[in-house]
Image (cartoon, rainbow, N blue to C red; front, side, top):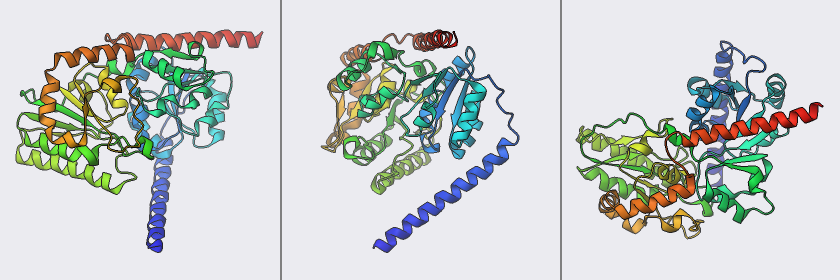
Length: 409
C-alpha cells in the first residue's frame, strides 16, 4: 500500500515538473516577442506570486485596475510561468515576469513603484516587501467573515484597503495593537461596479439560481464546501424543475484534496450536460470561466457557501441562501451577516426549490439584506466604490510624495 502511494506521489511530481518545464519553454518563446516595459512606466504594481489555480484572486481586480491604469500606470508582477502565460492573454494592464529575486530587484530599480498591491497572503509576498520607499498595501481578493480575514498578517503591510464597517469591527476584535485609523481605508467593493454584463441564457421566465460553492478547504476549521454534502441534491432538484435554471460556478480548487468532493463536482457537471441535452431550451450553465460578475448580478437567487461569494452577492442586494457547513469543526463567525443568514442545511437540500421560490419573493428578507449591504460595503451606488478606491490611491500617493520629499531634503 505504501509503495503504491509513493508511486502515485512520484507520478504526480513528475507530471508537475513536466508541466512546469513546458510552461517555462512556452513562456520563453512568448517573451521574445513581447516588448519590455519601459523604465519608469509603472507607478503602481500588483504583486501576484501564485500559480494558475489561484488566478481568480487577481482576475477579479482586472476591471478596477484597468480603470485605475488610465490615471496611474499599473503593472502586474507574476512569479509563475503558467500564470504569466495566462496574464499575457487576458490582463488589461501590462504584465512583468519576475521569476527570481534578481528580477524583482531589476523591476524595482527600473520602475520605482510608489504603491504595491497584494491580493493574497502568499509567503513569497515577503520577497517583494523587503523593498522600502514604496507603500505595501493589502487589498485581498474578496470580503468575507472567514478566519482568513482576521489574520495577524495584516500587520505586515503598511496599509490595507478594506470593504467597510464590518471589516473594521472584525479586525478590531481580532488584532492586538493594530491602528485601524492609520492603517486601513474603507473602499467598499469596486469590483461590483463592473458586475453587470450579458448573460448566456434567454429571458424566458425561468428563475435563475446561482450555485457557487467553495472548495473543500485544507483544514477542519475551513471545511465550508458544500458540493458533496448539499450540492448533488441541489443540482438534482433544480435540474428537474422546468421553472428553474441552474448556474453552477464552483471554486476553481474544488476537489484538489478530496477525491469524494471532486467526484461530486464532476457529477454535477455531467448532470448539467445531460439536462441540457434532454431539453435544449433549459440553458443550464456550468461556468468555469475567468470572468466573475454577470453570474452574481444576473441570478434571481444565489446559493453559496461561507466564502467571499456571499459578500459579492450582498454587494448587489439580491436574494441569497447560505449553506450550513456539515463539519462541526468549521469555524462559523455569526457576529456579522452569518448570524442573520438564510441558512440551508444539508438535510434541507431536497427542499431547495421551495426555498429558492420563497427567497425570491420575501420582502422582509430583502429589507434585512439591505441593512447588511450598508454595514459591509457602505454606499453601493454605482461608481461609489470605484471613487473611494481611486481616492484611497490618491491619498497614498500624496503620503508617498510627502515622505519622499522629507527623505530627499
